[in-house]
Image (cartoon, rainbow, N blue to C red; front, side):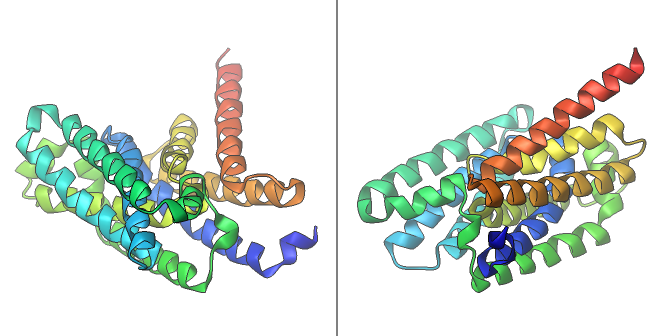
Length: 267
């Protein structure tokens, strides 16, 4: 149990708790708008930015964040160009992200091990600078969602009605996508690019099964996310397991238990 009291574990816990707030806050709007796969897309683009950061000796997480934000603008541009085939934008940007990541991997073979930690998560290596970045992103996300909660709610359920009512739909769409990019780019060092979508979607999936209102679903998804983060980190610390994997598997276990409980009550 000594590991739980160590400095690196405390930093990991702080970073995990912060992402545990922002991921489901953004995730619920993505799920309702059927844009769950945007998480994987921006995660792959972020990895390309991280790889470039290592290649040219820049702060990797910062480079990944810039790539993710630029990709979010590109996604919205393509979504506007292909209104009837909006999912094309996600597929195109994901392909570009994977291609760039592969290219940067081959140009910098010496740092591949470091980049791999971003693929699978390396929450125990979070330093003070990383925590400042995660904290800043958390503050931005919470403030923006608090200010535009009603607008995002309307946009998620009825985009046409939002447009007719005078809501700046294009700006709101861009804002959600940029916030998603910020969250994903900071979350990949915690759970990894391959698992980051789980934090965006699974807490939301659980909350939608049992919540009775949209607001309660938002709150419940954050609570579930935090439980999984803390529980997953403690399990990983005590039994020396991969923390990103334990967090996600705990979320899946909670989803299965919730579905089983709901089915049991309905029979």
